[in-house]
Image (cartoon, rainbow, N blue to C red; front, side):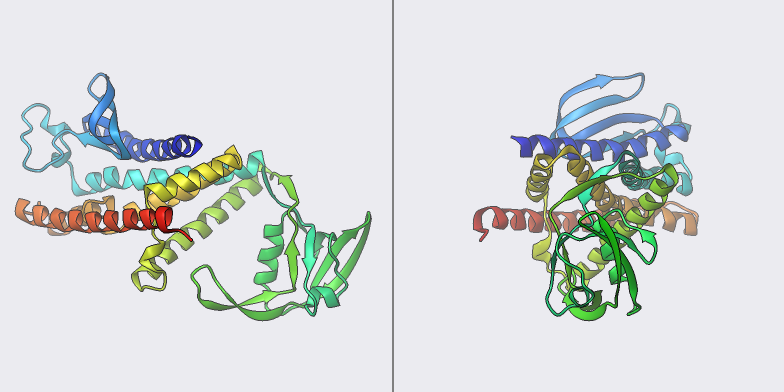
Length: 353
C-alpha cells in the first residue's frame, strides 16, 4: 500500500509541476487554457474555473494542458488572438519548453532546500581500513573520525570520497579524531582500475577506507546551500545526459530501463526509509523527466520544439501532412519504448533472481 501511495504522490507532484509550467507560460502570453489534467483518459472528477477545467483523469502516467487552437487546422472563430496556433514560433517554443524547465527548476529547488534545512548522510567515521592500502600504511584505523583534509573541514563521507577521487596522486594531509584526541597523517592515494556505474573500467584514486553505517545530520548556510544545490543539480543532469548517450551507443543495456512498476517499487522503498529520501528520489525523477521530455522525439516536448524551430527558420507553418507523419513516427517510438519498459518491469517482478 505504501508503494502505491508513494508512487501516486511522486508522479502526481511531478506531473503537476510539469503541466503547471506549460499552463503559467501560456497564460503569460494570454493563450487560453481549456483543460489542465493530471492523468490521461476519462476524468475521475473536475472543477471548472473561469475558462479552464481542472481534471484528475483515470490513467496516472502523465498529464496534459489543452490549449485553445492547439492544432493548426482547428477552427478558431472566437478570440483568435488567444489561440495557440496563432502565436509566433518563439512563443510556442516558450510554452512547450516551460514544462521540462519547471521540472528542472523544481529539482534544483529541492537540492537547495535540502542543504539549507539539513539531511542525514554517512558520517566521516571510518568503518574499515583495507590491508596494504595507503590509509593503513599511514596509520588510520577503524572508528577514526576524519575532521579535515588539506585544512578543509569535512562534514560528510561524500566530501571525503570526492576529494580522494579527484586527487591526482598528491599527498593528502588528513586530520582525524581518535578517542577524543586529534591527530594528523599524510596519505598519498594510489590509482586503481574499477568499474563505474556503467560497468566501464576507469582509473580512480583510492586510499583504502570504507565508510561506517553511522549517520550524521548536516546543514549549510544559505550561500553554501545554493552553491551545493547547483553543483548537485549539475552532476545529476550530467549523469542523466551521459546515461542517455550510453543507452544510445549500447554501453548501457536496454534491459536496465524501467517504467511505472520500477518507479513504484523504488518510491515505496525510499518512503519506508524516510520522507527526505522520498523527496530526494522525487528530485532525481524530476531531472530525468525534464531532460527526457527535451529529447527531439516527436510527441515529446523536444519534438514539438524542433517543429517550431523549423517554422521559425522557414518563416511559414509546416504542412499538416508533414506534421501528421512526424507525429506518427513519434507515437511509434513511444509505443516501442513503453513496451520495452513494461516488459523489463514484468521480467524484474516475476523472474527476478
